[in-house]
Length: 119
Image (cartoon, rainbow, N blue to C red; front, top):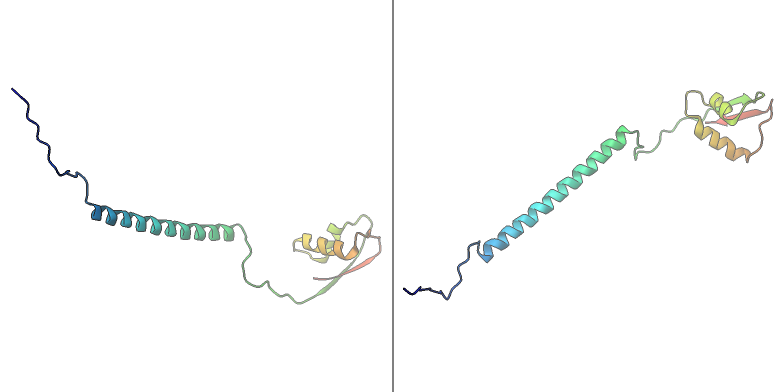
């Protein structure tokens, strides 16, 4: 017995048509873009909350405090740090130390010297 084989002239596709493939590809493209945008927005919000929780500065203008002159007399053994703590009690002394060092141009503290500070 001889085997008979039939070959058809048209190819049969097992998958979706070209038009359906384009629609599916466009849908996938849009879904991916929307997902990327949503993830980006979520990331920005999360970073803003983390920055606020870590004590990040706000974009608002800093508070304006009235200028109050404080003064102190340098005692033997004082440093800029101890003088800054007396001039601005309850505040971070680092900005005061920086400002005093800048104004003094590296001059050494002398016992009995009077220092005025306008916080």
